[in-house]
Image (cartoon, rainbow, N blue to C red; front, side, top):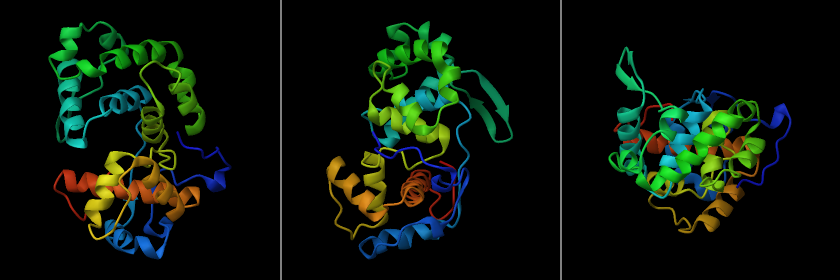
Length: 236
């Protein structure tokens, strides 16, 4: 879990727009930063649904980004309500009540059997305390979420970042961050372990807004790469 304490408004990252000027400028990170600044200003709207943020983070546990995307689409498509949008039908997150009503076979049929216990525990907890959680800041929210069975520090941090928009609390040693950083700057020698990578990341970005920007830009770069839209800012 992030060790950053909740600070005053001046220390908080921008809620939606993050400019390249917010990125840190360590010389050793030059090849990565040169690639990230090409994105321009990154616009990311916070996830308006804490339940969706928690569900998404649980479905991302252990697996790669591509595997998580497949699981997410299958789970939402099978059990979520679908709404029509200008870009096509959009399946929404299955409600906590729907999750609690699913059998083991129901989870297994869409490739989410591994996540069933965590999703059930999260659904029960969300129905009980979701309104309270939604009013919390990122650090307090993370502390609440790790009290739920099946939600560890990684999942709590990812969900809190998604919901609050503060990526200074994201799990910076995450495989996605490490993968996209290395892919964006293949010439850099980056640590391979989570702990060593996170320590380097924090040295590169010692201020909270810098840590937010470096992480968000790297994940946005990877999201563009994953979806074949290199070089264009995208919401994450």
